[in-house]
Image 1 (cartoon, helix red, strand yellow):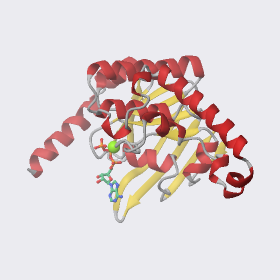
Image 2 (tube, rainbow, N blue to C red):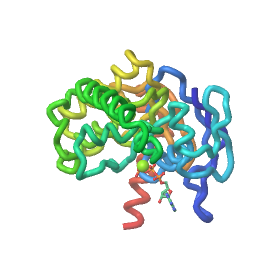
Image 3 (cartoon, rainbow, N blue to C red):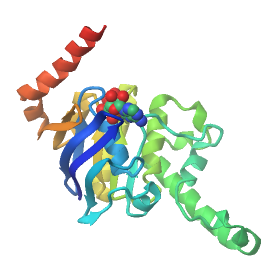
Image 4 (tube, protein in one colour):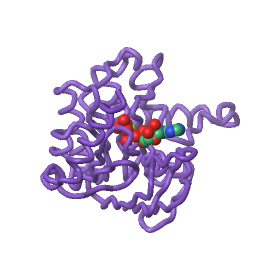
Length: 258
Ligand SMILES: Nc1ncnc2c1ncn2[C@@H]1O[C@H](COP(=O)(O)OP(=O)(O)OP(=O)(O)O)[C@@H](O)[C@H]1O
Ligand SMILES: [Mg+2]
């Protein structure tokens, strides 16, 4: 579904993504792992149109999407969540979800004067959709809570919920499990599996928790120093000498720097 070919993203002389090539198979839950600073988030940002690449190509179902802006990708069903949740703190959880779909009639002044009924209808549809999403994620009890009052884990769930307000095809998750307690992590994991199986979502997820990755992902892609180091099942990855070395290597480097 997604093909990344020889992608580079440099910051000055620093090669954050340094010639990465990979494929994300339709219907898969693909894991992306690697030591801190490996270039994972940067790679996501380039695929999702947040950062232009220095060079290289990204295609979606054979169509070149390199450098396409996020809103254009959104309309193609390519969505991402952020390593740090982006909620509107003073709005309710339900209102946060209702903010997501693009092209709302209410945003156009002309329509606010002449189309009040249409806006009311749209609002009802959005509300119903938001309630359905909250139920799916088993957080309907938080519907009227201010998003700013949610725990870190609940904010991650809300991020996932936002991807369900539209017809997503592929969702990029950047550390949805980070700092989340076990119970919520299971809820997030179950939601991802159900979205994959029941709604046909393809996922690519960055995660540091190998147990979580192991439960959800096949295949797992390992990045280190801007490059794809290995790909395989979680067992293959864990047994891969180069992978072990990459993780140890950064550990040693960090010690050396300290
Ligand atoms: N805007 C930027 N300007 C300069 N350097 C950057 C920028 N964004 C990222 N980098 C650098 O690129 C490298 C890769 O960063 P990135 O955030 O992609 O890593 P990551 O694999 O997501 O790490 P983590 O697991 O810690 O989230 C890091 O050394 C980072 O400091
Ligand atoms: Mg990152």
